[in-house]
Length: 112
Image: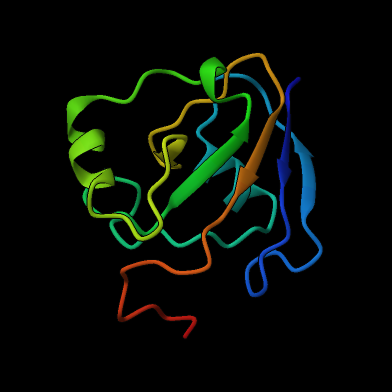
């Protein structure tokens, strides 16, 4: 099973984390199932950008982003070439190194 290596995030995952998940799982579901409370204001329906992540390693093993995801990513804070919405990014067979950006555009997060 591929490993997802979450880099430390000050609030969500201060120590970082390494988890193993089966291929075919979204990054968001994998994080949530393992206690990493990544934001997902639209309930994982590809309607916001609060679950935006940057895939530092293993990006090419993910499924391709569709046009709807690409359009939403244009609105994400801290967009980078290897950005994805974690609710849409499906884990392949390679390990991933994932950074959760410091901020989201969600002004009404329950955790702030």
